[in-house]
Length: 265
Length: 265
DNA sequence: GCCCGTCGGTGCGCAAGCTAACACAGCGGC
DNA sequence: GCCGCTGTGTTAGCTTGCGCACCGACGGGC
Image 1: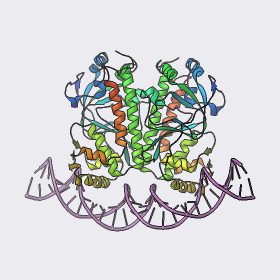
Image 2: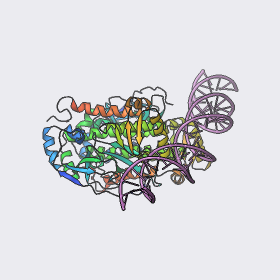
Image 3: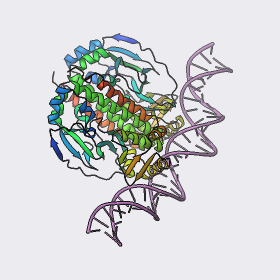
Image 4: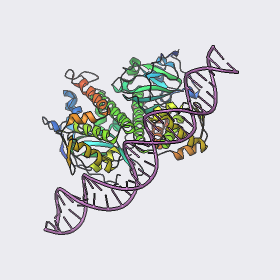
């Protein structure tokens, strides 16, 4: 059950400055841009701190900025009238939060919450649309990512329908690990239960099985994956489908130096 | 359980000809276009018969055409390795089948099957992209619709997680009715069960309840909704969320004569 | 060093939905 | 008018996951 929440004031730590080199400070979509696009966009990005338990967008909000996570992870969450909730999609440094902006709707019925604190590059609607409407590689890249996101959402739906909580937890951990560096995840079982849309006790039970099997270790909000291979083995096919689509996106981007572009640059 | 299926050869009945006036032969997205766009696109549309039990795209297929249903209804379906399945989205004359084409992925992991036979306008990838890349109202319209579709998918996911089969059947019937003319739906409980991803017997049970309550009547593949208001009352909130997003799209389109366009025409 | 809030563990009863097996009824074809 | 196929109805037993209630245990703040 999700309580009423507070919109967190996000603090912008640095303007127009892109940390380079350190992997956990990079967003893969931004990295895929080629030089001239990059030179236009980077000065407009604001590196923003994403605090724990924050909310980027509330359901129905007209969005003013789009976020490119670096070392943070955002969950799109739908909260029902009775307080029950379910995660729609998970977005880390492979993606972007706020697709409704360039898709033209400006808002969505879901909420964007912080699953894992960190940082994100923020781009205002104005600057986003200016670049998007050039219909170059940025445009192409965002649409292509959106399709990847659609696949993730569809697969989550299927998983909700057919798979056990044990399997879903494995899928969730794998998705989350892909978006983290290292094998450590800082999250409570309570939050996981809200994201999976199940009881907290069910998560406890599933997590216990994994711990007993030596797949993970956890302690008061810290999870360490110790046997990723086994995690994949216990998982349903849903993770692989999503992963494959995501890989397909980024493979397409790295082929020559700049094949992301609909039009070469 | 979904059997291996056959790709149906779709017969094109008429080329470059758009039936006008008769509502059930119209696609709402196409209708929303303004004159000059219309004049470019209409000659390239091929009115195609959509046969019962057909398959428009198989999972992973590279799509060659995009479909604008008129009086047909298409279901996007994910079929798991073990044969179980779940509907991802339902598309009628309010939408378009094959968004992966303009989103840049060219294929999806899901299958597009015929839920209700009828007709659709077909547009080849080449012609689609030619118009899409003009970045005018067609471009805007397709992206805006895609967001509506995303909402539907997200809500299906939530519904899968939290709502009873009784409620889901109501949601499904309402979505289907919105895409039909009149209150008659031609579909077997078997197919509904594949779409909802539940047992056929569960659909029988839920349908019986509705029939006993005087909400629907059905007989060997024919369903008639006799009390839509009651159907809405029994439904979960999911239908309303999806409907609202869809209405929001079309309200935005009908405001002046041509506000669909990102750039006026 | 205590307190209290947060986080995790456990047990019980219950309902929904699944597997499996089978019965029957409408309807078209011959 | 019979046959067989397709579509629907019914039953029995089982599993998963839910609601609820409560306990325990860690850990930071004072």
